[in-house]
Length: 600
Image 1 (spheres, one colour):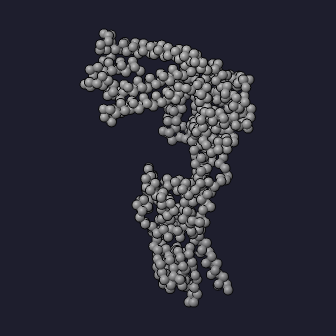
Image 2: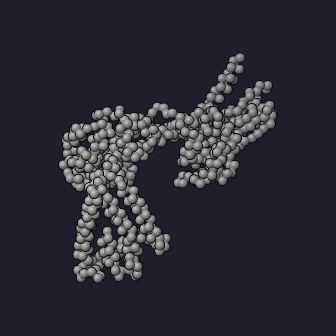
Image 3: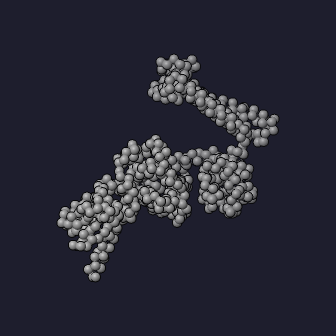
């Protein structure tokens, strides 16, 4: 790295008017200089008359060999010092510490030559970043200096072990609510020791999968595996004979892993990772969730074939990559795990919220939103889990959560009126939380007039009217947006006792819903029918388009009505199955009552 930047600075000599000794490098012009190629046959200033095209490769190669010689010398010095101090595994410690020193020097050398901010914070901005990098790398060097090879082996092994533990039954209770990825390497090994139910066959399978993963990635040699994986064998109580049995099986199932050198396998692993990245990009660009060769059109098949050829992987390795993107592949499992966790959380919140409705009717619309979310996610997730060979969703989930968690979840619902409903309830129940909502204005999500009004604190709707509507079974399937739509299109009227509501023979251009009190329907010269809260008035005339067939008066205690235009009524019939059923039920009961009176 030192040779590269030094030669690059010399190559740019005279190409920039900057006077700083490292002006060409730190200005970033070396990455954009189109004249570098034209200067290839010119000599480097103050160095040699030979052209740069010859000098630079020779100098870079010489610098690489000098680096190797220098760091081998550092490694030998550290090994001798470790042996004098009696450190265990002094040779391996020397290798690890040499790598730490080399990384420390390389990182800080890079930042010394370049200006990462490109002058963004002034002349001293780059120096601030360089000082910060020096501080952080020094802390990292200090913390890692005392680590032993066993710690590194445990960390390297734990990554592979985590992938194998995910599918073990009974893992979630053992974690006590923690995520497997959050466990430290030592905790992962302790977890294996604490799972006696794994069994010998299952333990061998897990051990074999870890061994395959580490051999394939080049992190392990067959000759080293007996020693390096000793701690892993001890966790599930395997012995050396189990190791040899697993190696013998791998020799039959994966001969390519045991018959190639470590660096060759590392190259294969890099090609495999590149193929995974390219295939993932292929699926995203074409909108596929899994790779299904039968579903590709000819052009997509040609593109997939080009990816295979560009990967340089043999056919078995390419097929192994494709399986990761299949219906039961690792990619699908990674996609389904957070969805499953989201469903479990929302189902638990829904069960908890069901128990709160008797005390607070204004929570019903949020319960309907959550019911729809849980049901929709279950419909999408259940077949995907089955296709991936994963456990199905449980038939029942224990209630879990609280009102604040419900509010936090539904505040980010795609429907802005649901978020507005959350904010309306929080102003009543948890006013201290409103300030937090105002600082979190749902970035990237839609807004609405009702939400904007709630953010400003305006009284944009009649909350008493909303409370009345949420308590009626006729609106059981209406979400917050539907209730707001209904409240905004209706007119609330408060009438004293005996006040006319509708007159016989008048035009049927609206209907009314009784919010409070009662009304008297005059069906004959001296016969009246009382209708109370939740009852509809005048719906037959609106449905038939004929004049009113009866007069309606406010009851003895007066009444409070929601007047709905006929157009709103017709739209409500289309929107709500529950409203249609309730209306038909009311009409049927009235018809049965009239039939009984005629028969009497």
